[in-house]
Image (cartoon, rainbow, N blue to C red; front, side, top):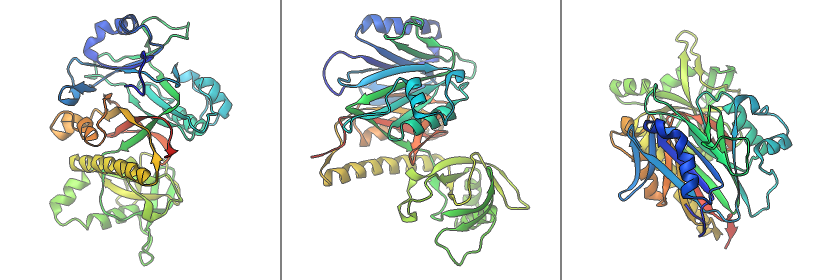
Length: 410
């Protein structure tokens, strides 16, 4: 991937776990073949995403390696590995995060900051890391995923190497932790985060009463004649909109909950990009309460969602269309978004062939709307932004579109 011509200085690679006997040779070989490289990060994946003569390809459970070389003139790059013990508190001062990330919090107006985060599943400080990056770099894009492997017993690996760091091994293999690639300059990453769900109905509910992750009472938004009710009653209300018993049973097995982090955005403007999907982890048939896999506060807006094959297809299509509409709107307003020159794709290992009954669905659907070279892997958890909040997701396709130059008036 290149925003200009020149020698590549950055490499991202994703490898199948079947290459485990060669893990210690990957970075030395890369450095030998491409001596201009200054920063390298990579990991193993359940599946590997890269280009082919037929277009983007997702290779699942078979030997494959995807390599992306970056030529990014004028862009300051850092590749930083961290352990659980090294991560600052999420509410640490901005300057603390700046020193830790080796990435400035002050940027010229025509420059952008973007982060690519790749972490091992044992990295339990991921929420602190993402919250800290959001706090210290609120305007920066963040995208990435959790390392995976072909099977539960297959070896997984994480690599991080920089020419400017002396306290590292030549093979760049890291035992756990997280690797973060930061880009600062005339290039930016535009995130697309499709969480694989469709709304059960058009109804939005407002949380009236809750405790931590347990919702006890809701009321319909824009429905003054409706009385407040337990969320289980609200769910039954939405389910009644389905025409057949079979439809209701199918949906009941795939229900999730969407929470809007932004409390102030007008109801008429809310779309899929504004909701964070979380699992329903328990229901109280007697009291009507619902437990969710996320702390929920009073005043939060929620929707009941369905996570299935058709929902995943519809959601990805809607996000891609919304992306193209934003491009068109910018063009009509006389703004230059810069040339798109690549895409990083971090999609769930529960999607792919297991969900769509076909290979490469996510990457090829993205290529229909954004025809640029792509790379990535099938993750054990995906990282992306929803309403300016970066979170760890599941069943998600998180895409980072690389563009050259800042947004500017033509």
